[in-house]
Length: 116
Image 1 (spheres, rainbow, N blue to C red):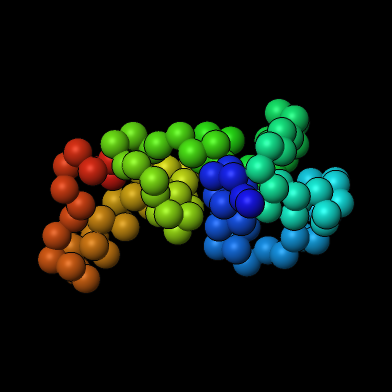
Image 2: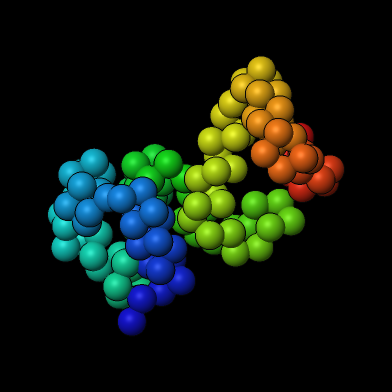
């Protein structure tokens, strides 16, 4: 039975479009190990492995462990990926994003939504 960590790991992996083997190769472990992390309760990867998995999936260790992003509880993998991409943008890129939001939706995100 998968643990909450295993469920999140699988969701992030699938959202990124990666196979078990691709994650294993990137992290330097076996496909069976990644499968066990996803499917078996009680697996305890090292901090080094957690970091490598998070880096491979484009998320943080906190995302893998299920720590909420600000006021958002249980964000789905697509929300996390979008937030991380937005957070990595330059101020100029963010301004362009807001202009597109105005054109497409007639508004920008509400203040306090974590997006400025």
